[in-house]
Image 1 (cartoon, rainbow over the protein chains, first blue to last red):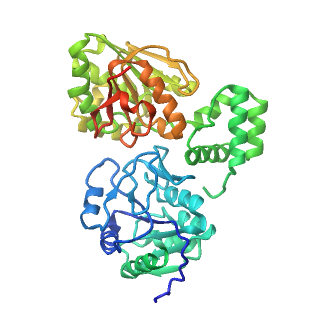
Image 2 (cartoon, helix red, strand yellow):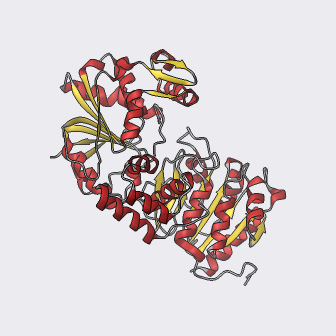
Length: 198
Length: 274
């Protein structure tokens, strides 16, 4: 069995950050997920603030699992693929549910990746896998550091493969990232998670 | 977000504010409450201990504290499609049975939604037939709301929203600009009563045909949301409407079966049972 990622079986969730420019990468990952994928996937992607519809539908077309924008206080479920809604910050609360907020923008962004990743790190600690993809600002770097500090597994997209590499580079400058991977390697990682985390 | 606060410290703060000042933040959603406290500490160059000391020693600090604690980020005509539904469906529905009616903006913050509603009513030609009540627990923000004055830089977004709302004129027709600030026509607020009211500890003070409380209850945990929704239910006339934020839902609350979904996309509910 391929064990290049040294996974253990205790992971509880995957969080993914990126910008609208990582749409292709995300689509590839979601379209090649094993049907038995055991963990919830929580995504925070930079997007147009005043376009409420369309993004989640576009992601759902190719995804193995339907993608939804959760409601405030909605419980996080196994097999769920969640996308932070436009113009809200999305936090994870103790007790494994989502909470929305309309607080000030963070890193010029709402939703801000740092908020989703940071609160997920707080709740899931070492049982979290964080993935940061292509993106045009530093949002997400701090969130990745918090995941790493709490013992979670951290992955960034190979900067040379990124349309804009500011985001993964920010994470690399803030903490020791576990794996720097191309999108097809992230697809392999997801398959290994499926084998290991039953 | 770099520093962290223990839950025990957050509890210390909420207990102190509750016992000393009567505000109850014990059932606020944890993650955003923690961010607000961190923000205050940073903004005022405090630590948890000096914050607690300040809250203890100087009662005049509480209003300043509340002003930073509550989230006062809002827009005029946020979710333009919501305001179109208000104008084209919900309010015409109310007018079928009532020539005049009451609206409550619960948690009105700096007043952008109150102003949006006032403009909407003006453009419908029924501004004088409607009484608006705008409440918030933060007295500083209420003063800002009453002044109807905002930084001019906010107007770009507000104007864009107004255009998507498909308003009759231009937003500019409603305000004057001076020294980087805009001030809206005071007549828009002829029919508005501003008052301090805390959703958590406050009483039911009137009956309404329409309650707007959008993106306020997201800062509460489910227990508190449930309590507040009971108050809204009681404050509504039968067949009155409740509007909540686009990512909020009534599904989990006790009074859910006493409401009917009037518009699912815009999260407008109609009270059908007492």
